Amino acid sequence: MTNSTLHSSSLHERDVVEHKQQAGKKLTVAQNTPAAHEPVPASSPNPAPVLASSSESNPATSAFGLSRDGVTPQSNTTLSEIVQQLCMCDNFVITGHVNPDGDCLGAQLALMHALRSMGKTATCIRVSNTPLDSAFQFLPGINSIVPAEEFHGECGCFVAVDVPTLDRIGAGAQILQAAPVSITIDHHACDTTMTQYVYVNPRAAAASLLVWRVCLMLEQQGATLSSAAAQCAFTGLATDTGSFQYGNTDLDAFECACSLLHYGANVALTSSFMFQRRTLASYKLQARTISRARFYCENTCVISSLALDDFTQLHATLSDSEDLVNALRSIEGVEVAVMLRETPDGIRCSARSKLCANVRMLAQNFGGGGHIGAAGFTIHDASLDEACNRVAALLPTLYATLPEEIQRVRA
Ligand SMILES: [Mn+2]
Image 1: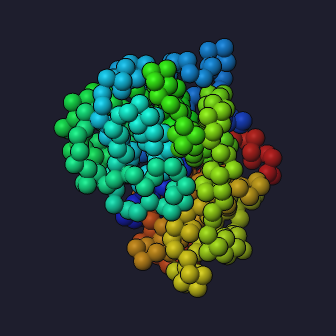
Image 2: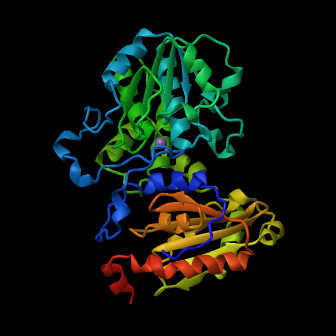
Image 3: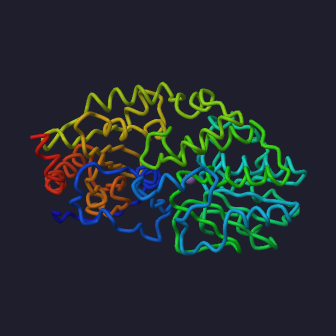
């Protein structure tokens, strides 16, 4: 890649999270980029689950509820052993990660409902101070979640779902320290652990899928699985599979969805809150984004931008613009999309690829980072136009790394 001045930058967490959902995408073209199989660095703020391709799973052994191989080497237990532990304890604290998403909250709440139905005390905690998105209000039990700092009850067993490491449970760490029993149920591959019992299965599309397996086993021990519990777990599964569109949507995911519907999960309700609540401001920003899109390299690469004025004029916030890079990527023929947003702290750039271009290489040129399919960086010393031009200047290098199949189709 061409050499460019290194600018101080920050990797946007969302750029990492988004890649997590991409990670399982099955490539239909040759992978020419040598970095395609690089493991996610352990220091990554939210390590992406390494999802197995569907060819690796044997349909004969994938019936939902059966324990399957695929757990990380750090795992030291099974879901059935975890169920035994859960049955022996009476007071639970259930944590997720900072900036909780639908999978995190769904898994926490589903487990809470199942444990409470057994007469146990279970409290879900929130480990970051940022207010929860109002979209989550439809989740049964959401208002019973308490900030970790405000939990002063008994904790006989600490359960972490959708999070494997201490650095992502904030003030939950103090509760964990004092707990006599602690359990992790997760799908993020990670080489460190924080609890006594660890079950991490990166093949699982969602933590909620693993938690629902636990719930089904708890049912055999006396739990009653309500439609509320199913609704929560379904929301988690729908979130992490991108509404059953991402490559991690495997047989197990559909089997789990089937079970959740059987227990009363409401698909339309989930969709209306999770996928049909875009703000009007976000659509207005998208109109400007698309109208300004500039295409490069046989129309395989696209760049667009929003200035501070756009946000002011449309009464929009930065969060209204989070998904716009995906709108750019969704354009037919586009392999690489880069969205530049002017903020008071510099030009925030989000890059996405569709099949196999390595946008991390692009981000690294500007001192940023991320994953092959989703990366981010910030440019501090340029106007919006100049920043666009700097990014555009690197696109031919990225285009040259695309597999010949794609280049031939586009040419
Ligand atoms: Mn998850």
